[in-house]
Length: 400
Image 1 (cartoon, rainbow, N blue to C red):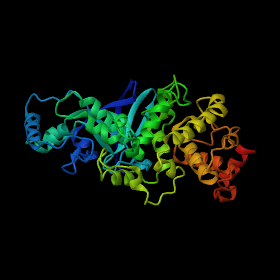
Image 2 (image 1 turned 120 degrees about the vertical axis):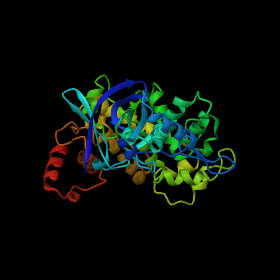
Image 3 (image 1 turned 180 degrees about the vertical axis):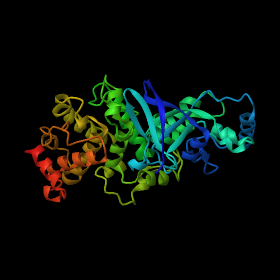
Image 4 (image 1 turned 90 degrees about the horizontal axis):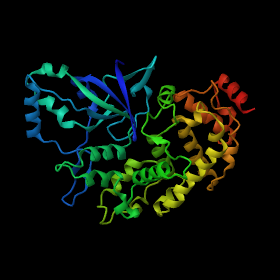
């Protein structure tokens, strides 16, 4: 698979880090996609996160691109490592990678994979479909790149960027993706809305064990990412939201689509999902609006993690990285399936393991190794199920 590697500039802002690159318009056209914010019915049911395509405007933009003095100084804003169905790309071969080479940053990505969701700038990009001078496709475009941005944050950024413009109704994007929930009945919240809300509260409440740690970041944050944030270790927003979702749904897209068959204030309710088979441990709590219980479960679990592990280890521990957070959510999910009640003993059992050991690494393999160790110690998996003899030896060394 052909990959493109481009020099990148890191920009740090309160919401999180993003990266700026210069890339040919033809390449961005090839790897990007957008879903317009459109009405499904005359009653106003919505889907997508963008303004509908305006053909007249695209034609005008195309003519402007053809001119001798055209320029697009403002950046196209993209969320990368996104599938067109709204999920996060898990296959490392298809993901964008952040590379640190002696303090210089590069982004590497596959040339022929649709992996970048357009948050802002779809008309500028689509205007290239209406040009006469095809050489304009070779011109470079300024792009701002966010990693692994969940759907709620894509809509939030779009609404924030364009909310002061008359052509965009900010509340529409916020209403769909979970940032307008203060005016909704909680009975109408989709799993994504609840998960996004819990993640925000855990990030902004000063008593939270996750206070100020949840940021927009690559889902598989590696040593390069940690190096970027020496002042504090951070947790990927996507990993946190998807971890919470794993407790309440096995298919959040299915749930969202089903609930959107009715308007928010006219019948949309979690009870619409009661006939779906779903093995998530806190599914019944979600369906019965027990949001405080779900939030407290996550809070108490990570409070125990913080007291018994995070506060006693350095930032090199992989339990302080996104892959570690993902495995901790796996532990929480499976232990709740087994015992139905949260038991802090599941944290005690893993607290003596050195998760900064060289056996672990920030990758898919490293994530599997962390999970194997944690699951074996909690008797969710047997050492006999480990097929690789070297892995067996390393695990026994770590847990002795």
